[in-house]
Image (cartoon, rainbow, N blue to C red; front, side, top):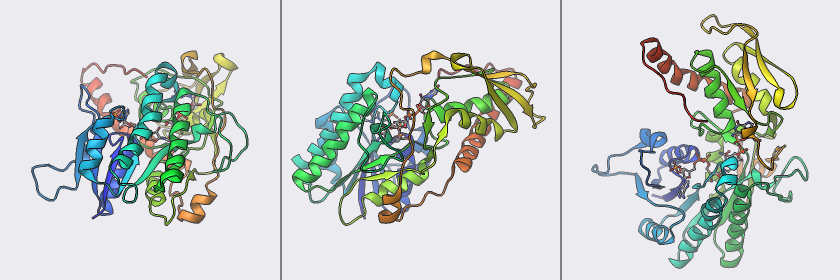
Length: 370
Ligand code: NDP
Ligand code: GDR
């Protein structure tokens, strides 16, 4: 039985990856951080009672900022494969906590690579590094491929640039099976609530149900190549199953503006939104509502701009070229954007119908921070 160790196991990708690895017969170990509230919601469905025998999914407390902890866990688990998904993964927040992002996303990667080396596991343990299309940053050429130059535009991306190159360096210096997956944005119903797609699908559901009046966004012109996390964790696994370690771009090859994502999300609920105005005065207004269950009069303004959500330096355009992954890994995404939006919006509608029932029954529903 193969043994895998997953950092960032409580995150979006961690949850999908653990499910995939368990389905392939792996014994899976995950590293979770201590938090003041239980933070395992995404993986609770995969929980196995440690008191039972034959348990194949085990959690360890740990942190990418703690070398001794990482060395101890790697020594104990002796993994065949490590997936380094743990990170301070929010680009905008990295401008507020740049040193922390550098420590966890940059040096955290080094700590894991060193743990493998210190323990003499270079020939046994394969490692996947969660690299990102944010490395491309300021547009040099499109579509972006494995040979496109990097120009990171945030403390997050600069930290990930270190993670990328230290992974390449350990592969070349010590003959380790260490690979980067340069993944473009991937989303799902498990996506963190403050990333733009999930913020939009949650708001679409809540506005339709009368739980929230408006959605405030930043740069509507940004273009992203959005795929589904379920497809992307399959690619991560395939990257570690090749004869030779290599880096791969994982993307759909289709790019869409944030503005268009908003339209698609509301359209999934039968609500037509049109945008008017320029710059920070741009607004999204309801021009039709085909669903009689939703009380949204034509003319209601439901999207406005809030400058707080703009970044000091922005990544305007991402569109990936997944040719190498398709050719060498045989990887093909199963979801297109329409199917992704549909799954996310319907999941959030179901989630917030519960709140709508509670509100109708007289319970106060608190507003959430974005
Ligand atoms: P999430 O933000 O959903 O998950 C991040 C995970 O990292 C969480 O489990 C989080 O724990 C954990 N984590 C944060 N800080 C630390 C730390 N100091 N020590 C250990 N663990 C930590 O991210 P995704 O699942 O979306 O992304 C997975 C990885 O892929 C990340 O590295 C991200 O940067 C990268 N990536 C993501 C892309 C995407 O579009 N989703 C695209 C390209 C790369 P907790 O739950 O406690 O916060
Ligand atoms: P990104 O994802 O920065 O690409 O990083 P995010 O969803 O945060 O932003 C995408 C684009 O939308 C614009 N935007 C907004 N973004 C947020 N979060 N909130 C808003 O209100 C808003 N309005 C407009 C942003 O400016 C941006 O252009 C994600 C993360 O998962 C990273 O960890 C990962 O490496 C990259 O994707 C690939």
